[in-house]
Length: 255
Image (cartoon, rainbow, N blue to C red; front, side):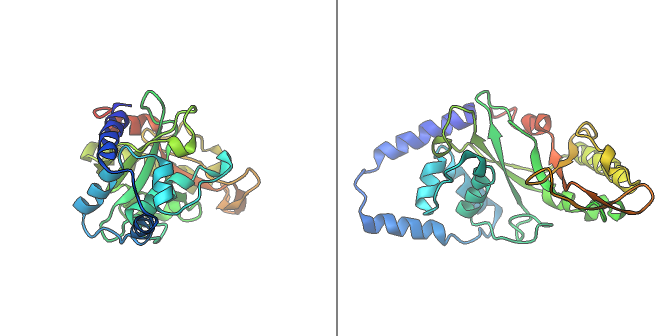
């Protein structure tokens, strides 16, 4: 967790240097600044804003944005990602495009264990089961999301309360030619399985870097797909995910 620990120490030193006396008026102004933060107009500005979050806790950022923390832990899964989006000025756009559409940058938070490894695979986008077979890699939502990604690591070991979890050092990433070739191969293999009507045969073991997994609020949720005869099929919604082993390799030189 070196990336998170280092930024935490730097933030702590900065905090001690600032006078603890903050008036209500100043505090309100600070909240307003965060609440109405505009979308960054260039990559350097976005990265700078993300770096300024490094070392801070989820509770601190939520307080400045006047956002209440979820009371129940089970409701916190999507909270952190939405909070970081708001803090960085991400506009709510199309689900098929990147979070920062004008910059072509997708934002992904990565929960890290105490050892600094991703605790889970990273959701990329929903898999459109009735359309995926006809999609080419270069025009897919998966490629649009992964062309340029701002990864923001979040401390997420079980001993840390949600409000105390610290934000780590961000990283801007684009796939290398080799990585994109493998992502494309995974996408085409997965699309082929779905296109043959074998969606129920999909497992998380298919794909080297990219996989398709169920993406639903509960096991009873259903979406429309097709079976191997082309007939309509009610099945669980699926999503594309980056394997945790792959995202771990992206942070290997900074953790």
